[in-house]
Length: 214
Image (cartoon, rainbow, N blue to C red; front, side, top):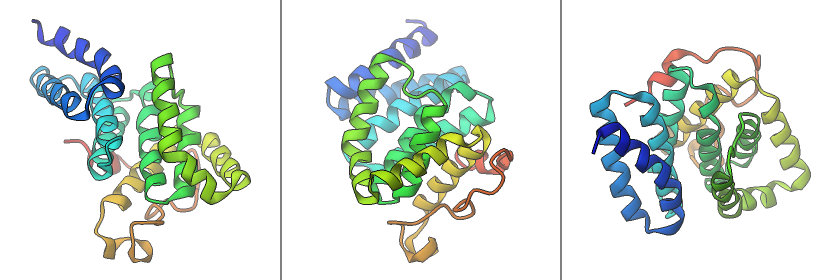
């Protein structure tokens, strides 16, 4: 089978695999697809596959692995100008923030992901509903509906450049050792340098994206 056709078939199948089969089976297919992407040198396909990989890692409870996949997906999208593909990794990183009780960060990122057009289709909406049920619902309860709505609305108003920088900063904070995080703990931490929105239209430093690109 042609390599590009294989990657396309796997990408179209993977959201359904995420829902219908075990994550271990889906991960095997996704690892194969990533290897093909590397041979093709195609960053767009790689970004798409990384998003599905993040979902397959997140749902069974491997947030650290999922964080790296979503951050790499977002970084590739930023680096290559795939502005219509940033919604999924924003939502994924928001779900991880919610899992780690970084509730305000989660609300900001889900708002930003909606502005970026996520979820874009019917199957994605099924996955988005699961993200809400499994991850965001607890964060919304902890914050309270009014506070969650305010933070979500704030994230929805951000320029995409600011939202992606904030998301990558939150991923960097979540991936760092506990002692290096604000407050000495990853749980409940804010992004290092982005904890208060500055100028929403500013462009994120390129180094922030490059750090996550494998």
